[in-house]
Image (cartoon, rainbow, N blue to C red; front, top):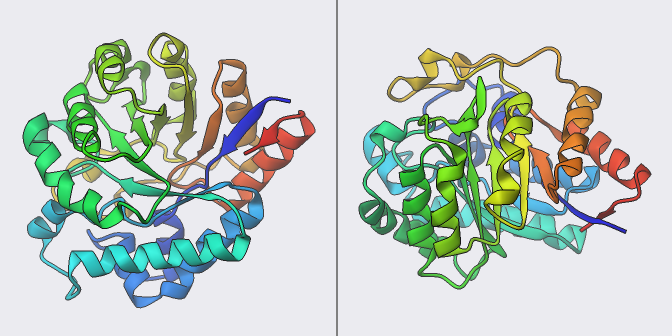
Length: 299
C-alpha cells in the first residue's frame, strides 16, 4: 500500500473568513490574537478532515515584516508561542499527527526582488527558527519564489537538526518556472547541497503545479504539492503592505474539482499533497476520501 502524507489547507484565509474582520497587512495574525478559539477550530477541522500535518499560524510572524508594518502590541516570541500552543493542543487532542513550523518569505510574498541576499536572509530567519525549534516536528519554508530565496531559507535551516521541507511557488502561466522567471530545474544544485527532506510546490494555480511536477523527480526524491484557489496573484497584491482582499477566489475549484487535480499529482510521483490559500477543510476531507478509496495509506 502506497503511503501519502496529507497536509492541511489554508490557515490564513480560513481565519480571515471566519473572523469577519476587515483585512489588514497582518492578515491572520491579528485574528489569532483576538480570537484564538478560531485558530483551534481551524486546526481541529483539518484533523477531522484527515490531515496528518498541522501547520502553525506563523507564516508571516517574521521580525522583518513587523519592522515594516509596526507591531500588534504583542512581542513576536509571544505571538509564535500562542500559535505553537494552539497547534500543539490540537495535535494532543487528536492523539497523532506532526506539527510543521511555517516560515514564509522575508519582506513580502511573491516578491523575490525584495528579498535580501541568502547569507543575510539566513541571519534574519535565525531568530524565528529559534522560537520554533524543539516545539515542532519539522520546518516548512513556504512560497519561496526564486532560487536565492530558497537558498536563504536552506542556509538558515542548516543550523538546525529539524527535518526541512522547502516549498516553492511557480509562475501561474508557466509552471516550469519559479515566479522569479528562473526554471525550476535551477533548484537542483541547491537541493543537492542542502538535502531538504522534501521539496514541494505551493501557493500556485493547480494547473501550473501539474506542469511543475513534471520536472520534480529530476530534482529530489521526495516531493509534493499544495495549490491555492486564487484566480491569480493580482498586481494589487504585489504592492507594499497588501491585504488579502486584493485577491479573488476561483469559483470553479470546489472540493471535487480540486481532488481531481490533486490525485493526478500522485501519478506524477508526489507523495505529499494538501492545500494552500482558499483550499479549506471540505477540500481536504474529499481528498482524504479519494485517497482511501484508491488504496493509499495516509501517514
